[in-house]
Image (tube, rainbow, N blue to C red; front, side, top):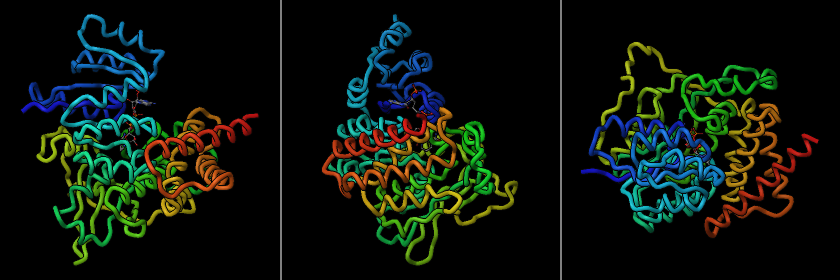
Length: 392
Ligand code: NDP
Protein backbone atom coordinates (compact mmCIF):
# COMPACT_ATOMS: atom_id res chain seq x y z
CA UNK A 1 0.00 0.00 0.00
CA UNK A 2 1.31 3.46 -0.86
CA UNK A 3 2.06 5.62 2.20
CA UNK A 4 1.59 9.38 1.97
CA UNK A 5 4.48 11.18 3.61
CA UNK A 6 5.80 14.71 4.16
CA UNK A 7 9.37 15.71 4.91
CA UNK A 8 9.91 18.92 6.89
CA UNK A 9 13.53 20.05 6.55
CA UNK A 10 13.92 18.00 3.36
CA UNK A 11 17.14 19.71 2.19
CA UNK A 12 19.07 18.95 5.39
CA UNK A 13 21.18 16.02 6.43
CA UNK A 14 18.26 13.99 7.88
CA UNK A 15 15.86 15.12 5.13
CA UNK A 16 18.27 14.07 2.39
CA UNK A 17 18.91 10.69 4.03
CA UNK A 18 15.14 10.15 4.25
CA UNK A 19 14.71 10.96 0.56
CA UNK A 20 17.54 8.59 -0.28
CA UNK A 21 15.60 5.74 1.39
CA UNK A 22 12.33 6.81 -0.23
CA UNK A 23 14.02 6.85 -3.65
CA UNK A 24 15.50 3.39 -3.13
CA UNK A 25 12.19 1.93 -1.98
CA UNK A 26 10.94 2.22 -5.57
CA UNK A 27 7.73 3.37 -7.23
CA UNK A 28 4.45 2.97 -5.45
CA UNK A 29 5.81 2.67 -1.89
CA UNK A 30 5.63 6.34 -0.96
CA UNK A 31 3.68 9.30 -2.25
CA UNK A 32 5.21 12.61 -1.16
CA UNK A 33 2.78 15.32 -0.11
CA UNK A 34 5.08 18.14 1.11
CA UNK A 35 8.79 18.92 1.02
CA UNK A 36 10.06 21.96 2.93
CA UNK A 37 13.27 23.95 3.35
CA UNK A 38 14.26 27.33 4.76
CA UNK A 39 16.41 29.23 2.21
CA UNK A 40 17.98 26.70 -0.10
CA UNK A 41 15.78 27.15 -3.18
CA UNK A 42 18.07 25.28 -5.57
CA UNK A 43 18.24 22.17 -3.41
CA UNK A 44 14.50 22.24 -2.71
CA UNK A 45 13.66 22.66 -6.40
CA UNK A 46 16.01 19.82 -7.35
CA UNK A 47 14.50 17.33 -4.89
CA UNK A 48 10.97 18.47 -5.74
CA UNK A 49 11.62 17.82 -9.46
CA UNK A 50 12.93 14.38 -8.59
CA UNK A 51 10.34 13.31 -6.00
CA UNK A 52 7.25 15.18 -7.31
CA UNK A 53 5.54 16.31 -4.07
CA UNK A 54 2.12 17.99 -4.13
CA UNK A 55 3.72 21.11 -2.61
CA UNK A 56 7.20 22.53 -2.01
CA UNK A 57 7.50 25.20 0.70
CA UNK A 58 10.34 27.56 1.48
CA UNK A 59 10.40 29.14 4.96
CA UNK A 60 12.05 32.38 3.88
CA UNK A 61 9.32 34.52 2.32
CA UNK A 62 11.79 36.51 0.24
CA UNK A 63 12.50 33.32 -1.75
CA UNK A 64 8.88 32.82 -2.82
CA UNK A 65 9.37 34.00 -6.41
CA UNK A 66 12.63 32.15 -6.85
CA UNK A 67 10.95 28.89 -5.81
CA UNK A 68 7.89 29.33 -8.01
CA UNK A 69 10.15 30.16 -11.00
CA UNK A 70 12.37 27.17 -10.30
CA UNK A 71 9.34 24.86 -10.33
CA UNK A 72 7.36 26.59 -13.09
CA UNK A 73 5.73 24.14 -15.45
CA UNK A 74 6.11 21.14 -13.13
CA UNK A 75 2.58 21.29 -11.70
CA UNK A 76 4.08 21.31 -8.20
CA UNK A 77 2.40 23.85 -5.94
CA UNK A 78 4.76 26.26 -4.18
CA UNK A 79 4.40 28.45 -1.10
CA UNK A 80 6.61 30.46 1.25
CA UNK A 81 6.78 31.69 4.83
CA UNK A 82 6.30 30.26 8.32
CA UNK A 83 2.49 30.01 7.95
CA UNK A 84 2.88 28.08 4.70
CA UNK A 85 5.20 25.63 6.50
CA UNK A 86 2.51 25.01 9.09
CA UNK A 87 -0.17 24.64 6.41
CA UNK A 88 1.96 22.13 4.50
CA UNK A 89 2.66 20.17 7.70
CA UNK A 90 -1.11 20.03 8.35
CA UNK A 91 -1.91 18.29 5.08
CA UNK A 92 -3.22 14.76 5.61
CA UNK A 93 -0.47 12.13 5.45
CA UNK A 94 0.34 8.79 7.07
CA UNK A 95 3.83 9.78 8.19
CA UNK A 96 5.84 12.99 8.64
CA UNK A 97 9.57 13.41 9.05
CA UNK A 98 10.13 16.35 11.44
CA UNK A 99 13.69 17.35 10.50
CA UNK A 100 13.72 21.13 10.63
CA UNK A 101 16.67 22.20 12.77
CA UNK A 102 16.05 24.25 15.91
CA UNK A 103 12.97 25.66 17.57
CA UNK A 104 11.74 26.75 14.11
CA UNK A 105 10.54 23.13 13.93
CA UNK A 106 8.13 23.39 16.89
CA UNK A 107 5.02 24.76 15.19
CA UNK A 108 5.22 22.68 11.98
CA UNK A 109 5.80 19.51 14.04
CA UNK A 110 2.84 20.38 16.29
CA UNK A 111 0.72 20.85 13.15
CA UNK A 112 1.71 17.38 11.92
CA UNK A 113 0.86 15.78 15.29
CA UNK A 114 -2.50 17.62 15.34
CA UNK A 115 -3.46 15.59 12.28
CA UNK A 116 -2.77 12.35 14.13
CA UNK A 117 -0.15 11.13 11.64
CA UNK A 118 2.90 9.17 12.79
CA UNK A 119 5.71 11.67 13.29
CA UNK A 120 9.33 10.62 12.93
CA UNK A 121 10.95 13.04 15.35
CA UNK A 122 14.46 14.15 14.42
CA UNK A 123 13.83 17.65 15.78
CA UNK A 124 14.80 17.04 19.41
CA UNK A 125 14.04 20.70 20.16
CA UNK A 126 10.31 19.88 20.36
CA UNK A 127 10.79 17.76 23.46
CA UNK A 128 13.55 19.95 24.87
CA UNK A 129 11.44 23.12 24.62
CA UNK A 130 7.93 21.83 25.30
CA UNK A 131 8.08 18.12 26.08
CA UNK A 132 4.84 17.86 28.02
CA UNK A 133 2.90 19.71 25.31
CA UNK A 134 4.17 17.42 22.53
CA UNK A 135 3.72 14.18 24.46
CA UNK A 136 0.17 15.17 25.50
CA UNK A 137 -0.67 16.31 21.97
CA UNK A 138 0.47 13.02 20.47
CA UNK A 139 -1.56 11.10 23.03
CA UNK A 140 -4.70 13.18 22.50
CA UNK A 141 -4.51 12.91 18.71
CA UNK A 142 -3.51 9.24 18.68
CA UNK A 143 -0.28 10.12 16.86
CA UNK A 144 2.82 7.95 17.26
CA UNK A 145 6.10 9.73 17.97
CA UNK A 146 8.87 7.66 16.39
CA UNK A 147 12.29 8.81 17.65
CA UNK A 148 14.91 9.33 14.95
CA UNK A 149 17.88 10.43 17.04
CA UNK A 150 19.96 7.26 16.84
CA UNK A 151 20.19 6.84 20.63
CA UNK A 152 16.46 7.29 21.24
CA UNK A 153 15.63 5.12 18.28
CA UNK A 154 17.91 2.43 19.74
CA UNK A 155 16.15 2.63 23.09
CA UNK A 156 12.73 2.62 21.42
CA UNK A 157 13.75 -0.56 19.60
CA UNK A 158 15.12 -2.12 22.81
CA UNK A 159 11.93 -1.71 24.83
CA UNK A 160 9.93 -4.89 24.54
CA UNK A 161 6.24 -3.85 24.21
CA UNK A 162 4.70 -3.46 27.68
CA UNK A 163 8.06 -3.75 29.44
CA UNK A 164 8.64 -0.03 29.93
CA UNK A 165 7.48 -0.43 33.53
CA UNK A 166 10.40 -2.80 34.19
CA UNK A 167 13.10 -0.34 33.10
CA UNK A 168 15.76 0.41 35.71
CA UNK A 169 17.79 2.82 33.57
CA UNK A 170 18.68 3.71 30.01
CA UNK A 171 22.04 4.75 28.59
CA UNK A 172 22.74 7.03 25.65
CA UNK A 173 26.08 6.54 23.96
CA UNK A 174 28.16 9.45 22.66
CA UNK A 175 31.09 9.35 20.27
CA UNK A 176 32.65 12.17 22.32
CA UNK A 177 33.00 14.46 19.28
CA UNK A 178 36.21 15.75 17.68
CA UNK A 179 37.68 17.07 20.97
CA UNK A 180 37.17 14.00 23.11
CA UNK A 181 40.94 13.68 23.70
CA UNK A 182 41.77 17.40 23.85
CA UNK A 183 42.78 19.18 27.06
CA UNK A 184 40.39 22.04 27.82
CA UNK A 185 43.14 24.72 27.42
CA UNK A 186 43.62 23.71 23.79
CA UNK A 187 39.90 24.09 23.08
CA UNK A 188 40.20 27.90 23.30
CA UNK A 189 41.84 27.86 19.85
CA UNK A 190 39.31 25.53 18.18
CA UNK A 191 38.25 26.72 14.72
CA UNK A 192 34.92 26.33 12.94
CA UNK A 193 36.47 23.68 10.68
CA UNK A 194 37.93 21.73 13.64
CA UNK A 195 34.53 21.69 15.34
CA UNK A 196 32.61 20.67 12.21
CA UNK A 197 34.90 17.70 11.56
CA UNK A 198 32.94 15.03 13.44
CA UNK A 199 34.98 11.83 13.80
CA UNK A 200 32.06 9.45 13.13
CA UNK A 201 28.77 10.98 12.00
CA UNK A 202 28.03 13.18 8.99
CA UNK A 203 25.42 15.76 10.11
CA UNK A 204 24.20 19.35 9.70
CA UNK A 205 26.36 22.21 11.06
CA UNK A 206 24.28 22.99 14.17
CA UNK A 207 24.22 19.44 15.53
CA UNK A 208 27.89 18.93 14.61
CA UNK A 209 28.86 21.86 16.85
CA UNK A 210 26.53 20.56 19.57
CA UNK A 211 28.27 17.20 19.32
CA UNK A 212 31.65 18.90 19.77
CA UNK A 213 30.52 20.74 22.94
CA UNK A 214 28.49 17.70 24.13
CA UNK A 215 25.46 20.01 24.32
CA UNK A 216 23.90 17.58 21.86
CA UNK A 217 24.14 14.83 24.47
CA UNK A 218 22.68 17.18 27.06
CA UNK A 219 19.73 17.95 24.77
CA UNK A 220 19.36 14.21 24.18
CA UNK A 221 19.22 13.48 27.92
CA UNK A 222 16.34 15.99 28.19
CA UNK A 223 14.69 14.49 25.10
CA UNK A 224 15.03 10.94 26.51
CA UNK A 225 13.61 11.82 29.94
CA UNK A 226 10.54 13.36 28.33
CA UNK A 227 10.09 10.76 25.63
CA UNK A 228 10.42 7.74 27.91
CA UNK A 229 8.99 9.35 31.06
CA UNK A 230 12.15 8.83 33.14
CA UNK A 231 13.89 11.06 35.72
CA UNK A 232 17.36 12.41 34.96
CA UNK A 233 19.06 9.89 37.36
CA UNK A 234 17.78 7.01 35.22
CA UNK A 235 19.29 8.35 32.00
CA UNK A 236 23.01 7.77 31.75
CA UNK A 237 25.58 8.81 29.17
CA UNK A 238 28.67 6.85 28.21
CA UNK A 239 31.39 7.81 25.75
CA UNK A 240 31.72 5.05 23.17
CA UNK A 241 34.05 6.20 20.44
CA UNK A 242 33.19 3.54 17.85
CA UNK A 243 29.47 4.54 17.85
CA UNK A 244 28.38 0.96 17.22
CA UNK A 245 26.07 0.64 20.22
CA UNK A 246 23.59 3.52 20.09
CA UNK A 247 21.51 3.08 23.22
CA UNK A 248 20.94 0.54 26.01
CA UNK A 249 18.03 -0.35 28.28
CA UNK A 250 18.67 -1.99 31.65
CA UNK A 251 15.71 -3.89 33.14
CA UNK A 252 15.07 -4.61 36.82
CA UNK A 253 16.28 -8.21 36.47
CA UNK A 254 19.72 -7.01 35.32
CA UNK A 255 19.19 -7.77 31.62
CA UNK A 256 20.55 -5.07 29.32
CA UNK A 257 19.18 -4.80 25.80
CA UNK A 258 20.94 -2.66 23.23
CA UNK A 259 20.66 -1.78 19.56
CA UNK A 260 23.82 -1.89 17.43
CA UNK A 261 24.45 -0.75 13.89
CA UNK A 262 26.86 1.13 11.65
CA UNK A 263 26.89 4.85 12.36
CA UNK A 264 24.60 5.74 9.45
CA UNK A 265 21.46 7.80 10.09
CA UNK A 266 19.65 5.85 7.39
CA UNK A 267 19.31 2.96 9.87
CA UNK A 268 17.23 4.79 12.52
CA UNK A 269 15.40 6.72 9.79
CA UNK A 270 14.50 3.45 8.04
CA UNK A 271 13.28 1.98 11.30
CA UNK A 272 10.91 4.96 11.69
CA UNK A 273 9.96 5.04 7.99
CA UNK A 274 9.00 1.36 7.84
CA UNK A 275 7.52 1.23 11.38
CA UNK A 276 5.92 -1.04 12.52
CA UNK A 277 7.68 -3.15 9.87
CA UNK A 278 11.28 -3.11 8.56
CA UNK A 279 12.84 -2.07 5.28
CA UNK A 280 16.11 -2.65 3.46
CA UNK A 281 18.87 -0.02 3.64
CA UNK A 282 22.18 0.33 1.76
CA UNK A 283 24.00 0.90 5.06
CA UNK A 284 27.27 -0.84 5.72
CA UNK A 285 26.68 -4.15 7.48
CA UNK A 286 28.08 -4.38 10.98
CA UNK A 287 31.19 -6.56 11.09
CA UNK A 288 32.08 -6.94 14.77
CA UNK A 289 35.15 -9.11 14.12
CA UNK A 290 36.75 -6.40 12.01
CA UNK A 291 35.81 -3.69 14.55
CA UNK A 292 37.52 -5.91 17.15
CA UNK A 293 37.04 -3.78 20.23
CA UNK A 294 34.36 -1.55 21.74
CA UNK A 295 35.47 1.12 24.25
CA UNK A 296 33.47 2.90 26.94
CA UNK A 297 34.35 5.72 29.34
CA UNK A 298 32.43 8.23 31.45
CA UNK A 299 31.88 11.71 30.00
CA UNK A 300 34.09 14.48 31.38
CA UNK A 301 31.79 17.26 32.58
CA UNK A 302 34.72 19.52 33.51
CA UNK A 303 36.05 19.65 29.97
CA UNK A 304 32.49 19.60 28.55
CA UNK A 305 30.32 21.69 30.91
CA UNK A 306 27.36 21.75 28.49
CA UNK A 307 26.28 18.32 29.65
CA UNK A 308 26.01 19.46 33.28
CA UNK A 309 24.23 22.67 32.18
CA UNK A 310 21.61 20.62 30.36
CA UNK A 311 21.05 18.32 33.34
CA UNK A 312 20.68 21.32 35.65
CA UNK A 313 18.16 22.88 33.25
CA UNK A 314 16.25 19.59 33.17
CA UNK A 315 16.02 19.61 36.98
CA UNK A 316 14.83 23.25 36.90
CA UNK A 317 12.00 22.57 34.42
CA UNK A 318 10.65 23.40 31.00
CA UNK A 319 11.38 27.15 31.14
CA UNK A 320 15.06 26.43 31.74
CA UNK A 321 15.32 23.77 29.03
CA UNK A 322 13.59 26.01 26.44
CA UNK A 323 15.94 28.87 27.38
CA UNK A 324 18.98 26.58 27.27
CA UNK A 325 18.04 25.49 23.77
CA UNK A 326 17.40 29.01 22.45
CA UNK A 327 20.56 30.49 23.98
CA UNK A 328 22.56 27.59 22.57
CA UNK A 329 21.12 28.10 19.06
CA UNK A 330 22.20 31.76 19.11
CA UNK A 331 25.61 30.95 20.63
CA UNK A 332 26.32 28.20 18.07
CA UNK A 333 25.37 30.54 15.19
CA UNK A 334 27.71 33.19 16.67
CA UNK A 335 30.54 30.63 16.87
CA UNK A 336 29.92 29.54 13.26
CA UNK A 337 30.04 33.24 12.24
CA UNK A 338 33.39 33.68 14.00
CA UNK A 339 31.98 36.09 16.60
CA UNK A 340 32.82 33.99 19.69
CA UNK A 341 35.23 31.21 20.58
CA UNK A 342 34.32 27.55 21.10
CA UNK A 343 34.46 27.68 24.91
CA UNK A 344 32.26 30.80 24.90
CA UNK A 345 29.28 28.73 23.70
CA UNK A 346 28.57 26.99 27.01
CA UNK A 347 29.60 30.11 28.96
CA UNK A 348 27.05 32.23 27.09
CA UNK A 349 24.30 29.66 27.60
CA UNK A 350 25.05 29.53 31.33
CA UNK A 351 25.07 33.35 31.57
CA UNK A 352 21.76 33.51 29.74
CA UNK A 353 20.08 31.05 32.11
CA UNK A 354 21.36 32.98 35.14
CA UNK A 355 20.48 36.34 33.57
CA UNK A 356 16.91 35.29 32.74
CA UNK A 357 16.34 33.86 36.22
CA UNK A 358 17.48 37.18 37.72
CA UNK A 359 15.02 39.10 35.51
CA UNK A 360 11.99 36.86 36.22
CA UNK A 361 11.79 33.23 37.30
CA UNK A 362 11.49 30.77 34.43
CA UNK A 363 8.35 28.61 34.66
CA UNK A 364 8.97 24.95 35.45
CA UNK A 365 5.95 23.89 33.35
CA UNK A 366 4.32 25.43 30.32
CA UNK A 367 0.57 25.82 29.80
CA UNK A 368 0.98 25.47 26.02
CA UNK A 369 3.24 26.02 23.05
CA UNK A 370 2.92 29.83 23.22
CA UNK A 371 4.53 29.82 26.67
CA UNK A 372 7.48 27.88 25.25
CA UNK A 373 7.79 30.26 22.30
CA UNK A 374 7.71 33.21 24.71
CA UNK A 375 10.63 31.84 26.75
CA UNK A 376 12.43 30.93 23.51
CA UNK A 377 12.18 34.58 22.41
CA UNK A 378 13.26 35.93 25.81
CA UNK A 379 16.38 33.74 25.74
CA UNK A 380 17.21 34.66 22.14
CA UNK A 381 16.85 38.39 22.90
CA UNK A 382 18.99 38.07 26.02
CA UNK A 383 21.75 36.18 24.19
CA UNK A 384 21.73 38.52 21.19
CA UNK A 385 22.03 41.52 23.51
CA UNK A 386 24.95 39.88 25.33
CA UNK A 387 26.63 39.22 21.98
CA UNK A 388 26.20 42.84 20.84
CA UNK A 389 27.95 44.04 23.97
CA UNK A 390 30.81 41.58 23.22
CA UNK A 391 31.03 42.91 19.62
CA UNK A 392 30.90 46.58 20.71
P1 NDP B 1 20.45 20.51 8.67
O1 NDP B 1 21.00 21.82 9.10
O2 NDP B 1 21.27 19.63 7.82
O3 NDP B 1 19.03 20.73 7.92
C1 NDP B 1 18.03 21.51 8.52
C2 NDP B 1 16.80 21.55 7.65
O4 NDP B 1 15.87 22.45 8.24
C3 NDP B 1 17.05 22.09 6.24
O5 NDP B 1 16.10 21.56 5.36
C4 NDP B 1 16.82 23.59 6.42
O6 NDP B 1 16.52 24.25 5.20
C5 NDP B 1 15.63 23.56 7.35
N1 NDP B 1 15.52 24.77 8.17
C6 NDP B 1 16.51 25.41 8.83
N2 NDP B 1 16.03 26.50 9.48
C7 NDP B 1 14.71 26.54 9.22
C8 NDP B 1 13.68 27.46 9.55
N3 NDP B 1 13.92 28.55 10.30
N4 NDP B 1 12.43 27.23 9.08
C9 NDP B 1 12.18 26.14 8.32
N5 NDP B 1 13.12 25.23 7.95
C10 NDP B 1 14.38 25.43 8.39
O7 NDP B 1 20.00 19.76 10.01
P2 NDP B 1 20.06 18.21 10.33
O8 NDP B 1 19.38 17.44 9.24
O9 NDP B 1 21.42 17.84 10.75
O10 NDP B 1 19.17 18.15 11.66
C11 NDP B 1 17.77 18.30 11.63
C12 NDP B 1 17.21 17.97 13.01
O11 NDP B 1 17.47 16.60 13.27
C13 NDP B 1 17.88 18.75 14.15
O12 NDP B 1 16.93 19.01 15.14
C14 NDP B 1 18.94 17.78 14.67
O13 NDP B 1 19.23 17.99 16.04
C15 NDP B 1 18.23 16.45 14.46
N6 NDP B 1 19.12 15.32 14.29
C16 NDP B 1 20.00 15.30 13.25
C17 NDP B 1 20.87 14.23 13.08
C18 NDP B 1 21.83 14.16 11.92
O14 NDP B 1 22.49 13.13 11.77
N7 NDP B 1 21.96 15.18 11.11
C19 NDP B 1 20.86 13.10 14.03
C20 NDP B 1 19.85 13.21 15.03
C21 NDP B 1 19.01 14.28 15.16
P3 NDP B 1 17.71 24.93 4.29
O15 NDP B 1 18.45 23.79 3.69
O16 NDP B 1 16.98 25.73 3.30
O17 NDP B 1 18.54 25.74 5.25
